[in-house]
Amino acid sequence: EDLQEFFSRGIKATPEKPVLVDQFLEDAFEYDLDAVSDGKNLFIAGIMQHIEAAGIHSGDSACVFPAHKSSLEIMEHMRRAAAAITREIGVSGFLNIQFAVKDGLLYVIEVNPRASRTVPFLSKASGVNLIEAAVRVWQGEDLQQQGLVDKSGIAEASCLYGWAIKEAVFSFDRFLNIDPVLGPEMRSTGEVIGMGSSFGEAFAKAQASAGTQLPVEGKVFVSVNKKDRRTVLPVVKGLVELGFSIAATRGTARYLFDHGIMAEVMLKVHEGHPNLVDNMHTGNIAMVINTPMGMFAQHGDDEIRTEAMRMKIPYTTTTSAAEAALEGIRHIISHTPEVRPLNPA
Picture 1 (cartoon, rainbow, N blue to C red):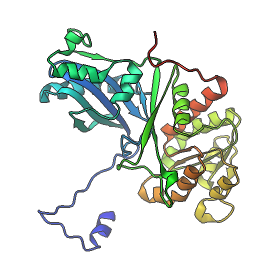
Picture 2 (picture 1 turned 180 degrees about the vertical axis):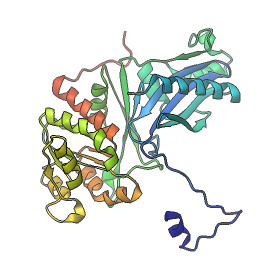
Picture 3 (picture 1 turned 90 degrees about the vertical axis):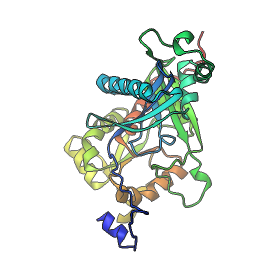
Picture 4 (picture 1 turned 45 degrees about the vertical axis):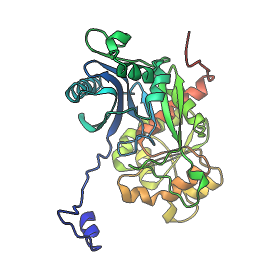
C-alpha cells in the first residue's frame, strides 16, 4: 500500500532511474565491531551493542561495551565473520563492521575499511591506543610484533572497569519545531562516555553526561505496542518495586492490570485533555517509556517526544533502552557515584 501511494504521486521508475525498496529490520539488535588488521592478524578493539533498535544511525544510538545480554554463540559468530572478511579483502589498518541480529540470525549491514567514530571511545574504554596500533601497522610492524595478538592471529580487548557506554548528545532544544525522532540519518552533535563496574553505573553516568538525569522517584508513563508488552512487564514491575507510580494508555494499562499492576489511565494527545503532554507540563511525569511500531505510530507521537526533549524528561522508545534505564536507576538509588581514572595504575 505504501508503494502504491508513492507511485500515485507521478513517480516513474526506469532502468536509468530505478526505485530502491529497502526492508527495515524492526525489533532487531545492532552491533558495531571495530578492529585493527595487518592483512593477516586481527586485533578486535571491541564489539559494541546498540541500546536503541536497529535502524537508528550508529552515531545516534547509545552503545555498550562489552555487548550486553548477547549470546556467546552470536558473539563468536561475529568474531569469525570479522576474521574471514578481513583476510579475504586484505585490510591493512582500521576496520569497522556493523552487524544486526534478529531472531537469532546474524546480518552484515556494512563493512568499512576505515576508522569509525567509536575508535576514541574504545581506546579510552580498553586502554589500548588504537590510532598508534594502526599507524605502526602502516609503518611495517605487524600486530604480533606489537604484542597485540599471539600466534593464533586474533585477539580481543577488554573493558578497563567492566562496562563502558557511549551516549549521543543532541541539540534539538536549540531549534523550533524539530521532532527528535531518530532514524537512519545522523542527527547527534556530540558523544559522551560513562564507565563503571556495573552496566547500571555506566549507563547512569552516560545519561548524566549527556544532560539527562534519570529519576529516582515519581510517575512513569508507559505506552507500548502489543508486541512489547510482555518484554516491558518486568521493567514496570522493577520500577514499582523501587517506589515509582505508573501511568499508561488504556491498552497498556489493561495489560498491566491483568498482570497485577495498577496503573493510572492517561489519555493520548489526540484523545482530549488532560492528556500525557498536559501532565508533562505540570511536572507530573518523571520518565516516558513508549515503543511505537512502524513509522505512522512513530510520527503520531512526535509531540510527546518534542515535549520530553524540551523539558529534559527521560524518554525511551525501545524496551532495551527501558531495561537499561531501570538498571541505571537502581544503581543511583543504591550506590554513591564513584570517579575512576581513565588509565588505572
